[in-house]
Length: 346
Ligand SMILES: [Zn+2]
Image 1: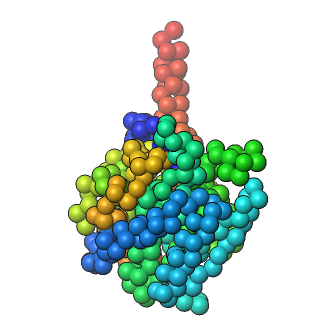
Image 2: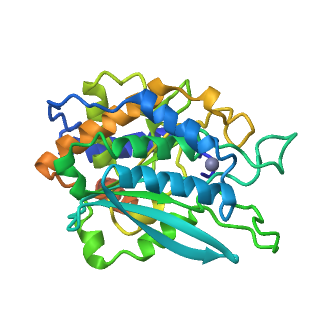
Image 3: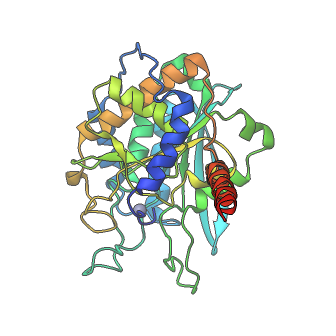
């Protein structure tokens, strides 16, 4: 994904407070569920992806990794569809997994499974492809583990989507002079959604760079506040408040953006500032940890049980312009009163 933006400003914090006040702060529904997500098993999925080598769009490595992912998902009973699209003469493939023949999807869980073609943050190796253990590998690994730890009766309400073409931004992947945009796969995926599918999706949760051994997950700024609050409340109840930090991190251009643009409540669970291995040859399994994956996996699994058990809805964020409008009213009143008062004095 693209670079993290500046830290949360105090203005943004005040505006957020305005939003939270009428909602009564955190949603603090008690989670009465013990997740079975296994961080070690998820970590093994990182190893298995990395054994294919770097996995940039259109590569043989990515194609082989895709076959491994499809076999894994099908072995756990998921029905897999490949969503193909072509960009810059390169065939890209989103992998979509549904459970049962009559799915009733409410939540989309997403991760990108392609890796960056160049180690653009590695000054000595800028033209070498990265292994992407964390960036690409970790979110994919967590989704593969969730595919068989989410309670079976809830799986028809969930769609797993593995995006291609997320991480080639600003790189001329095919040596044609075309610099690629970011988030190609998720953009294509949302473009294909029908109005009904958009309407019936209560939440989209994206897992990206969740495997670093020193995992820190502040709140991603552009994510939907109400959805983020609900997930962070679950994390707090499970004792992961030391990882899901109650502070604001960066704003990230990532696969949740096309969903937000389509007014689907969306959350990016991502480490910011990015770990030092980001877009370098150091993005290897050794820098990742089963414990980190376990924390995120348990939180997402418990959140799904709690959310899909009640079918809560998440309101999209209030637009900034509305806040400005609301703030303008008292300011105008003060100006008018002051104006009248000063005229009377003259
Ligand atoms: Zn990346």
